[in-house]
Length: 402
Length: 178
Image 1 (cartoon, rainbow over the protein chains, first blue to last red):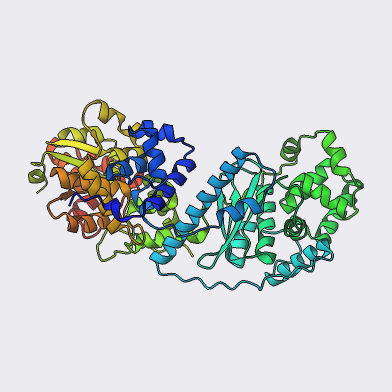
Image 2: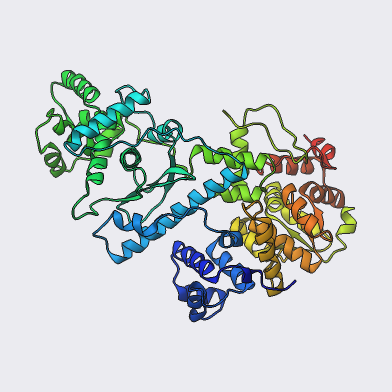
C-alpha cells in the first residue's frame, strides 16, 4: 500500500517534466529546494533523473508549481521538436532570451497537449481539410505572396475588403488552432507548429496589440500554407540573414490584410474628400484594415500612393497615434483574446456536461478558478430555457450556443 | 443523517462547497454551527485563491488548513496515476481533499458528482455532505429567519452560479425558497 507509486515511472522523464515546470514558473533550483525543504543537490538529482522523487516530494513540487500531480505522470502528448523550432528561427538572441523562448515553447506545447486530451476524452477526430501546401518557386517572392493571398481570399470567399477577425477565420474556416499566450521575450511574436495528431497550431504573443497580433497570425498562416511541416518561431529582428521562408511569410500579411485593389480604392476615397492624405486619414485607413499606421503607410509607399520614406518622415515627427484615433472616434482594435480556440472551450464544456470531467478539472482546462468556470458556464448557457438532467442529476445545464 | 455524520472528527470542504458557502455570505455562521472541526486542503486554498474570502474563518479558527503527510502523499499520487489516466478527469484539489479524508476518517463536503462517484467508490468509508445539506443544517440549527435563508440560497445561486441537481434529496427544499 505504501509503495512509492512513482517508482514505476522513468526518473529521467519525470525529472525532465519537473525541470520544465520549474522553468515555466521562473524558479531556480535553490528557490524550489528552499520551498520544499530539501537541499539544492536533491533537486538537481531529481531533475537529472539520478534520484527517484518521493511521493511527498512530488506532491510538494506540484503544489509549488501550481500543477496537478497527474501532469507529471502522463506522457507528454505533444512533443515539439523544441530545438529545431527554437534555433531554426532566431539566430541573434541572448542566452537569457533563448531560455525565455524555450519556456514559451513549452507552455505552448502544454496547451496543445490539453487540446489533444480533450479531443481524446470526447473521442473527437477532426477532419482536416487543408489546402495542399503551396510550392514556392522563389523567383519573385513578393508577386508569389500576392498571388497566394488572393488565392486564399478567393478560396475562403473573403472578397477584397478589410478582413473580419483573423483569429476566427483561421480557427473556423482554415482549421488552424490559435492560442494566445503572454510570451517572453517581448520581440517573440508567434510560434507555428504542425503535428499529425493536432494539425496546425499557432501561438500568438497576447502581450502585443491587436494590430500586431493580426499581422503575426497572417505571417504564421503563410507558414502553414507554404512551409507546413516546419516549426517556426517568429522573433522580430532575430535574424542575421532571413531564409526565403521567412521573407515570404513577411511579405504575405500585407497582401492578405491590405489587398492593393481595396487599399487603393479606400485611399482614393479619403484623398478625394480631403484633397490630401492627412495623418488622420492614415489613422482611419489603418483602423479600417485593422493594421498599424506604420503598416498602412508602408503599404501605401509600396503601392506608390505615397512617396518612398513617408513612414520614416512621419515617425520623425512622433505623432500621437492613439490621441488622433481618439479624436476621430476610432475605438482601439479589439479581438477575442482568450488563451484557447473557441472549439477548445466547447469541448471542455461538453466534457463537463457529459460528466466526463469534474468541475475542478473543467476549471483547470479553462485555466480559470472554479468560481470563474461556473460563471463562464452560466454565461454561455444564459438564455437557454431548459435544464438537461444527466443520469446523475447534478444539474448540468442546456446545450452550448451554436 | 447530517447530524450523525458530524460525529466524525472533522469535515473537510472541497472548493465547490467553499465557493457556495462564501457566496452565501453566511459562511462564518455555517461553519460556527457545525459540531466538528472544519478544514480545507492547502492545495484547494491556494488553487482557488480563496484565501482572501476565507481569511476571517481561518483567523477565527473556524477553518483549519491541512497538508498531506508522507503516507497520504503516496495515496494522492496513486489516485492521480489511476484515476487521471490516460486523460485527467479529476482535479488535484478534489483528490487531495478525499485522500486526506480517507486517511483521517473525515467527512468530505463536495457538490461534485464525478469526484464523489469515482472517489467514493474507491474509499467507501468516506462520508459525503453537500452544500444543500450544510445550508439546511445551518437553517435548522440556528432557526434562521425565512428572509435570511432565502437570501443566502439566492446568493449561492446568483453569485456562486450553483444549481442543485434534480436527484438531490434536498432538491425540493432548496427550490421551495425561490
